Image (cartoon, rainbow, N blue to C red; front, side):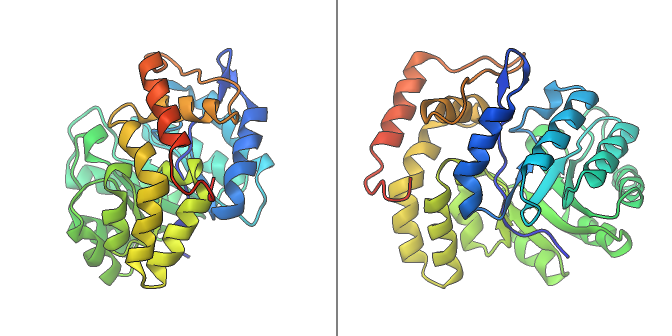
Length: 293
């Protein structure tokens, strides 16, 4: 069954360089009543800054804390196929619903090289493989026709997370039987308007009730109602959290909200400055309705 629904990508809370399970539990309590699950250890989760062992430790603890009826997709992107497979098998063994993997991002990729990489990863799985189309980070643009061809031969590839802004891919992939997840907050409503099957973005983790209202209105065929809530509750935050510094601003926001005990990030990232904190607080405090917070 393809992955779909509201699965926010979430930051990993740290305290003194270690995973902060108590802050993580507060985040789950905040967002899971209105989300279908979440996406763990992707870009937002600072996975590239963690060792394989750290990623496994965090995944095991997170899955232990999460109700089984919720969908959890665990990021396994790595420049090493062997490490991606190791992470994927570990996630599967601990109850993940799927794994998220982008193209390896050091050597130049070819269509055949990527096909082999994902074929080997797929063969190691019994759960869903979500292909992460992230050209900004991987320097690789995935053609819809190539993805469709891979999905036709890979047993577990049924879903694509689309961070690319080429929204023509949505209908094309769906016509081929694939699920498409909107994957970039700055154009989030455009993904919704394009008819995606779900989202893997940040804002549902911050404003879960508001985003559930938006999602339900879109799926009920009422984009005007969806936009009213989106504009009032979500746009102020997504406007000031920035492009390229979403991780540190999201952590700052969760800290301001009292969910994370710290906004600590791992090197080479650095926390936001005081000026940005003020803007984030203003965006949060001045959402007009506040009934969804």
